[in-house]
Image (cartoon, rainbow, N blue to C red; front, top):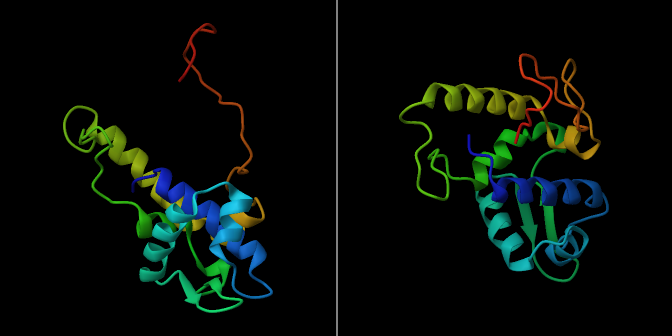
Length: 153
């Protein structure tokens, strides 16, 4: 599963819709202002999210977007799958899922995908994680077997 900018922006925008959509549809212009995301970029993302059945649109005065189903039923994996291409290729054209180290990236992708399948939009909106998972708050890394002067990038 590719974790790129499109997916990250889509999650942020959907969290905004989840938090602000209780009174009705949320206009993308409002999301753009609150989240500092280009309106034209949001329109592209929400077209993909609509095609994937994650949001629905309403037109006219008071129109905007709403979640197609409750936030607790939308896995973050669904969001990333809706907007990211699944080729495994980075922007530079390298296919990380082939060649030396492919097993490392495949295993990492599986862990990420499993985590995102268990984390819902509702979890993300309240900063929670599924039971038994570490908090979403940044945690200091514990690295063993490295000298103290080694820095991880």
